[in-house]
Image 1 (spheres, rainbow, N blue to C red):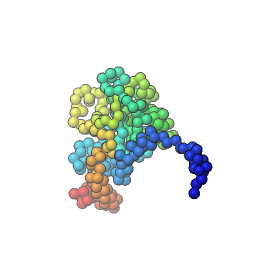
Image 2: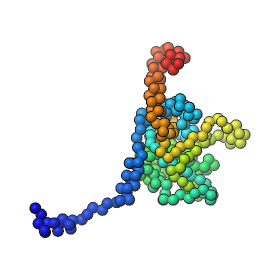
Image 3: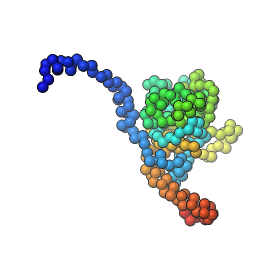
Length: 261
């Protein structure tokens, strides 16, 4: 049994400080949204094939985006809408820097104005995203500080790169909003209207699955996840049979006809 003196000494022991803000933020970012998926076992090509079979016209492919800093991504999207700094009509971002609002286990997906030649993502942002537990960034726009991303080991995919930063050219406007990402065409094609109908725009919603690898970037709507996995497994099995027969010299056409129908 404890004596009164012992009890008093226990009461005087320092109580650990609990950072409630950090705890609650991390809980909200991990408990409400699952951040792993069976989609991760497939390539972006296999997932696009599955989405095409589901009559998704673009196959989930987010066009014109290239691997800048290596690393495969398969995570739900945390979306960021960028606008020109001169845009006074679009909303102003609240809640602090958009990187500081990134969700643990999510990939940052940014849509920047097509006319912007500046970068919207740099090495410091990759460092901040890593600290937040983000898994990578996909940018419909430009990045910079390529060497820093690679040194940090942070996956970066973007349309291109630039030497100038975000300020004073663009600003973040909203997060966790749908992003409609359009293909980019040379100005001569866009001006003539010939680009209409060539390739449909892709809408990325917050929480949709985004898979990125050396072949490209694919968005899988969250509600189609299980069906896409099922079709991708079936497609992989068929392609393995085709590969075996083609290697044995049976011909591409004959192998396709036999296994793909």
